[in-house]
Every structure is written in structure tokens, then in C-alpha cells.
Image 1 (tube, helix red, strand yellow):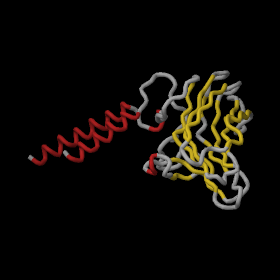
Image 2 (image 1 turned 180 degrees about the vertical axis):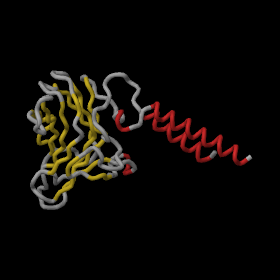
Image 3 (image 1 turned 90 degrees about the horizontal axis):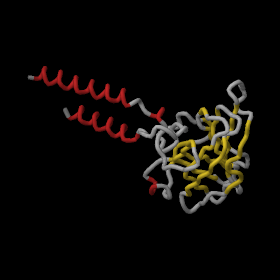
Length: 212
């Protein structure tokens, strides 16, 4: 009964994180409070920082001692053509980070290159080193059908490790930034979760019957 209760509690916790809004869901998989780098590619790792929830929650980081850029790319997502989208995230960077970029890299459905369209949403910006800075930008998707985001740490100024941190990456349709919520694909469906609950209950009843 204790195990079954714990599982039901965990399922309820997950259900509570699943977005319930019909429109404007987050297009970025594993964009906040990561435990791994699933759905991302590049040089990022999972980290923590005292300026971000007092180091109690995780975010991504790009760390380098070199002068060349290092990058982190999100999952590819579908977009509507010529439609407004809003990106929001938290970022902070060491004082020796040269600067940072965030790109929207798109393509049409009949194209096979990784991207044929480049929109620098943020270009050569120096993020705060004294706090986790909340960043938002609204842009138009242009003549694209799919895209991905790329975060760039543009290198160290002094040869010492230079770190760009970012987290709670949220991309939604429209012009209003929203507090981070998980992409629907990060979780099983509510129906599947209910099925697990039913299975746990059935096992609990079976175990109870055997024990009597």
C-alpha cells in the first residue's frame, strides 16, 4: 500500500506539471530544470549556480577556455509560417564570456539542410554575471515550417573557463511570454498516467487478496 501510494503521489505530481492550456504550448523539449541533456545537442552540460534558486535547481551550461564559440541546440519543432512567437529563458554568464547569441534556425518542409534561414534573436549580448536574468524576445517565424534554437557561448576573453548558463527555455506562439512549463512531449499522456494508476490499484488489490 505504501509503494502504491507513493507511485500515485508521483503520478499526481507529474500530472500537475502537464500544461492544460489548449494553445500556446511550449515547443522546447527538456527546456527547464533538466536532469540530463536529452533532446539537446552540442556542448552543454547540466549544472547549477548559486544565483539560480540558490543552487537547488538545475539548468544548462556551456563552458569553454577557448576563443571559439561553443553551442547548444534544441530539438527541432514545427512552426506556422509568418507567425509571431515568443521566446523566454533565464541566463547568466561569467564576466570573461566574450558574449552570447541565441539563433532561430529554420527551414521549409521540402528542404533537407539543417537550416536555410537564420534569425539572430539575441546577438553578441553580455548576460548578467550577478543574477539570473529573465530574457524575452518576440519574433516572426518567416517563411519556415520547422526550426530549432541555438545558444552560443562566444568564447573566453582570458583563457580561463568561461561559462554561460541558461534554463527554463520556453517558446510559445503569440506575443506574450509565459512562465516556464514543460513541453507536452516531456511527459506521458494523462490517459497513460491514469492507466498506470489503475494498474497500481489492481496490483494492490491482488496483493491484499493474497495476503488475506
